[in-house]
Amino acid sequence: MESIDKFDLAILQELQADGRLTNAELAQRVGLSAAPCWRRVRALEEAGFIKGYHAEIDRHKIGLGVLAFVRVDTERVTHEATRRLEDAIRKLPDVIACHYISGTGTFELQVVAQDLDSFSTFARQHLMNLPNVKDLHTSFSLGEVKASSALPLGHLGGSARTRAS
Image (tube, rainbow, N blue to C red; front, side):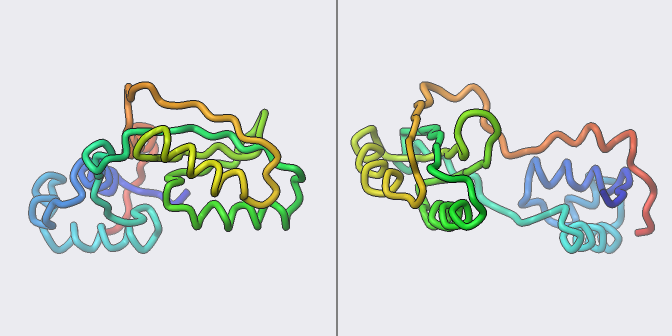
């Protein structure tokens, strides 16, 4: 991993908490002047530490009340069959996350839907027809205890090294 210093770490923490901060607000919060802060943010973006900026939308407010976790078992685990399945999954906007997993199953999907009927229709029309799918196992969220896209950064604090600004 590329090294980051305490200012980079502070920038990452602040931007995770509020990606809409102006450069002046961010600079003030991390203890830098505006120009060096802006250069550091650009450097963090170019190095791939910051992948983008997004609005966090409440799925319930937009009518997506169902969150399903779908484990996908495949027929074959070959490079080509897996690539075709991955490509097909990427094209489904209702699938908001997909992970290649260990243990039982090949993929774990997170799928949103308006209600159980619309999830059922989606599963029958799309998930069951994905290439190389042998079986689906679905669990439904009964309530969210924690949902965050913020990553823990505490492990970077002790190893942060000084980098020229």
